[in-house]
Length: 104
Image (cartoon, rainbow, N blue to C red; front, side):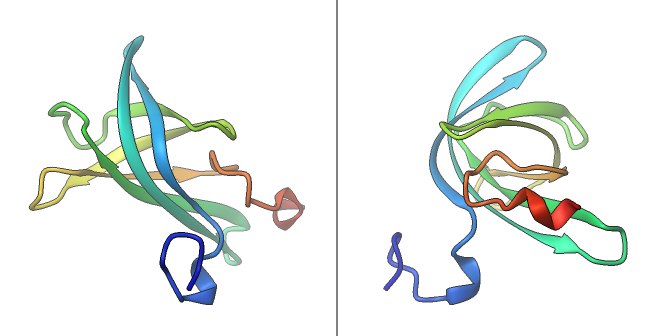
């Protein structure tokens, strides 16, 4: 089993844990599950995930997600049935497993 009880080899890259979301200069302490992949057609890295513990926010709300590894800009894409927010970012993600050479 993997680091987080996950046996899927293709999910090694990502982050699961505490984070801070910054929206309109206000910080929110949250829990996140993040992953991503390189999009060969666009030549960009897309990352996405689920944010738990964030106050009600509208779809499209821009934010900065801060993990112990890095900060990255993203936006809320939708809210799921359990009240978590789904987010998406393009470019270097806020997790250390990311290999920036994929963007070269």
